[in-house]
Structure formats: structure tokens, C-alpha cells
Length: 417
Ligand SMILES: CC(=O)N[C@H]1[C@@H](OP(=O)(O)OP(=O)(O)OC[C@H]2O[C@@H](n3ccc(=O)[nH]c3=O)[C@H](O)[C@@H]2O)O[C@H](CO)[C@@H](O)[C@@H]1O
Ligand SMILES: C=C(OP(=O)(O)O)C(=O)O
Image (cartoon, rainbow, N blue to C red; front, side):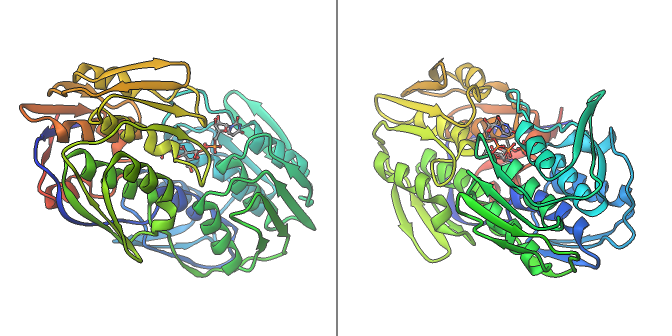
């Protein structure tokens, strides 16, 4: 086990290039299961979740070769093997194995997902979708068993516009008989990315990125080459870190439109922002005004940036209120920030944040974005060394974090625990 050591107090300066998106990559890799021939994914991020997914596909018999930011997946020899345990338990997005295996083999046994469990994260909408397509779904000793004689298109109204359920239903429906309509579908950019890959494979999916997605099932999908969209959450984290350290950072290789809610909030606080075609420059100021933030589904403020934003708001004058309307209790970072001197209290689904002077401390990341919040907090501390344990969570979602921060001038390193 390793820990991150941060000797803070240095403004971040320079440029950082953002890798491909985790939440796309870990849906696109299982999507390749549906193809008859090789799928090539470019702009793949170097993350532990991606490595686990490669392991899952190899266990099923796929040929996977991963070199730098490119992964080649030849799924021709994949077999229908039950996976009640093992690597599927290591990450949240293993739920996509259900849709992908159901689509290809009409059956699957997949252990309930692991990953960041900052609160109970049900998958009832995924199951409702599979059942609507004609599958029988049972939970046997913590593994989901899915079976269908035939998958038939259906109209599915999601009770909550779930990213995972929307993608999972697209995966299963791509090869179902007839048309599927997903209503109240999630609109996150990663959903468009998955639909783009599936369409390049020969699927017929329209409306991804809107609340109504139509899928005309086809009998066969072929291999293709696809470049993954930039990671808006990593990009947003660096934007927040630049503002928190009063630095000046160009966040490059991104789609600025995907970050509009964050950009608007930073401007409202008084951060200087310059938006270019594929990059955003964030220039910090000595003082920021307090703001209220509401984490919502896309295009609202991303819940995955809520924890990093909490750290920045400890640097704003007065009192800020940050509410999460996607998850009701995603505040595991708060007690750790309080150990660093932050004046924050949680009331219901809101964190009430006062301007605070942070101090170095030994803190623990218990999920991915809580980890990002603690790193940002550590970067702002003027004296002493902040130690962040739970680095394995951070490695799920940040490509070359230490290298990038060091290039930006931060004094950050990893040590054995
Ligand atoms: C791998 C991946 O892409 N992870 C992202 C995905 O997670 P994930 O796909 O798990 O999140 P969802 O969009 O499904 O969850 C949104 C909300 O719906 C609820 N819900 C979801 C499914 C369901 O069947 N029933 C139900 O009640 C959840 O508890 C949550 O309150 O979107 C989240 C919301 O943007 C992000 O935080 C995660 O980074
Ligand atoms: C919660 C997250 O991811 P996952 O759904 O993969 O746990 C995240 O990326 O912040």
C-alpha cells in the first residue's frame, strides 16, 4: 500500500494534458464484447479500473493488448463464463458486463459490483431494463443471474436518469430484436461516447445525449476503431486545484462545453477563466466570493466534482452551501477535511462550508473523489506535509496524478505505507 505525501503552499503553474475519460473507457471496453472482430480504443486512460476491465475480458477468453493509450480487444473467442466473484467485485462499472454478456450470449452471471461505495448504489433500473427486454433476472448469493430466450426491444422509462442503466440497456438492446426506446435517459457525454462506438460497430442508436434514446436492434456488430472523449472530471479537478492554489494552469485536450457548469461557478466565485477551443486556462485570485453549488445530473454541476469543490470552497469568503441532488450522502471527505481544520458541517444532503485555514494532517481517502478533495486541500496547506492514505481509490480515476502535479510545480510524492 502507498500513501500520497503533499508539501503544499505552492501555486500550480503550467499546462496539463487530460487523458481519456474513465467513465467512458470502462463502458467501451465491455461494449467490445458485442463485436465479432477487433475493437481498437485510442486515448485510453492509465487507470486501475481499466486494468481490472482488461483482466475481466482476458478471463473470458478475449485477446487484449494494451500499449500506452491504445487498447486492442479481439473478442472473437470470448466464452460465456459465470463471474460471480473475482475482478468484477473490484469495480463499480462491472455492471456493464451484465448488458454486454446478455447482448452477446443471452445469459450472464455477474457478481454485484464493487468500487466506491460512499452510499448504497442500487441497480434496480438496470434490472428493470433487462427484464423489459425479456430477460429473467435473479440475485443468487450476491451474483446477478440473467437469462433470455430472446431479447426483444421495449419501451423503458427510467425512474431516475441513471448513467449506468442507460448504457447497460443500450448494450443489451443493440442486438435485441426490434426497437427499444429509453425514456428519461441520462444525458452525460459518456453516453454519447458509448453510442458513437456502438454505431461505429454497426448498431443503430439515435438520440444519445437527449432524454429519449432509440435503438434499432441489429443481428451483428463488427470491430472498429474509436477515440475516447477527454475526462471532464479529471479536467475539472485540475481546474479546481489551480483555483485553490491561486495558480495559473492551462487544462488542455478537453471539451470545454462538458465543463460549463463548473466554469460558470468558478467565474461566479471570482476565478479568472479563459476558454479556448480545446483547453481552459484557470487563473487564481487571492480572494474568492462564497457560492452555492447544486450537484445535479448533466448538464448540471457534476456530483463527481462535488468533493473536490468542497476543498476549494474552504478558501472562499463567508459561507458556501454545496448540495448533492444525485447522491444524498456523498460526504465521506468532510470528516477528513475537518481534521485538516476545515469548518464544514453536513446538514441533510448539503455541506455548509466556511472559510477556513487548513493545516497538514494524516487523512484517509475512502473513495475516489474524496481522495481528490484531500489532495487539493493538501496542496493549499502552507506548512507541513499532508499524508493521504487510500491511494488505491485515487488510482481508479486519475491518470499520472503525481507526475502531472509535479510538472505543475507541486511538491507531491508517493511513499510506502
Ligand atoms: C462508472 C460510472 O460511469 N460512474 C458514474 C455513474 O455512476 P452510476 O451509473 O452508478 O450512477 P447513476 O447515474 O446510475 O446514479 C444516479 C442516481 O440514481 C440512483 N440509481 C441508479 C441506478 C439505479 O438502478 N437505481 C437508482 O436509484 C443512484 O443511487 C444515484 O442516486 O454516474 C454517476 C452520476 O453521475 C457518477 O457519480 C459515477 O462516476
Ligand atoms: C463514483 C465514481 O465512479 P464509480 O461509479 O466508478 O465508482 C466516480 O468516478 O467519481
